Length: 485
Image 1 (tube, rainbow, N blue to C red):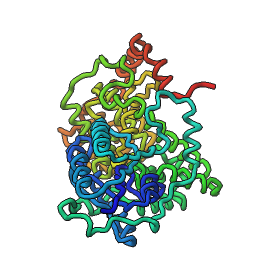
Image 2: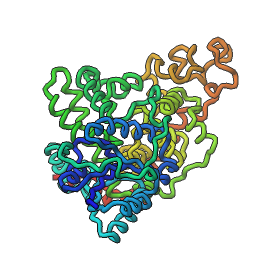
Image 3: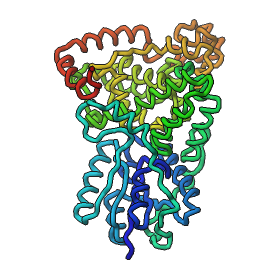
Image 4: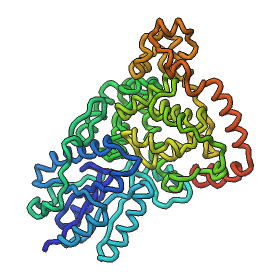
């Protein structure tokens, strides 16, 4: 039996700038591309059908490219340990190749079991770095230089023509999982997965729509076209961060784009910065980054939490953003930060009560970015600026004509600006004239931003000054912030 090299695809669903695939081809063995739909992830509260649809679309896209090489990705629905045991029993596995995963505890524990499995069978497992993230780094000494070196280095380009892929006839039908049709279909409003769409999206950003990126990034409406919209393609690895960064550099001199490309470049740096935070302190999936916040006086308000989750708080921009997420999987960064601020500041609910809900809605959910950013916006780090977003003020500034709100909260479509931003101030007669029912949540919202914001400000700044919070700051700065020159 001829030995094979297994390329285990995780959040790297592409055939370009792919070190594991390149190394597997260069091993000289037959190559098998593998993707696992793991039940423990399919059932995990962080994930939703939208994520598996994006993955399935990505696999279909890869298979269209691989058809020219008489192969396709082997898709299995199985826990990783069981799947690999089956493959090891059927093939002579010479090595397993994959990227390191900056993931949830469930995937970290899975990887530890796979490592033991490989050691038991004396099969080498070659893991390659995820972007510029350094596994196990305890500080940021030299990290920025490392990031620049990695992002500017030559792409790892697999030569597919040099590969001898495992033929489909060698794989028993019993191992295959047929992708459900509903996973493969496009859904209106949601971005479609796959490297082909990733490249088209990136090209369209450079061709015209990215010109206004720097001044449209905060608008919930304009950002939908002016932003790069590359986040789901980066999250699921349809394109590497290095490919995007080098594309930005290649267009650096493009007339009229410099301010936008400068802004985008800094955000690509932030991408790895936050993932490095999670890699260096992965327990923040469950606990506050700053342990001084462990006993923060959160409230338990199930009805308020449900209203936030369902987009029924009675505060127009908050509800518009949540409903937009439910239907499209996307809102811009400013609106995401506002949603977390509402949860943790205005409603005074524990960040853990909403962190999986937003993960489930974000099509671009990336564990390594999600948790550090969520805690930063929730103000439980002790090292980041406390930002309490006033959703009324955000609506007035970022949706001044009410276009976004009326698109997603049709109950208010006849309410004119500026009353649209504070509908709870409508008189009974005004509400009737605008078609707002007397029992509408918009006349009796779950919170009044000005009042709840004032209370949150006093609560948060008081707590930040406590010794148990301040006592953690030096260690956190040492771990997560570059040292001063």
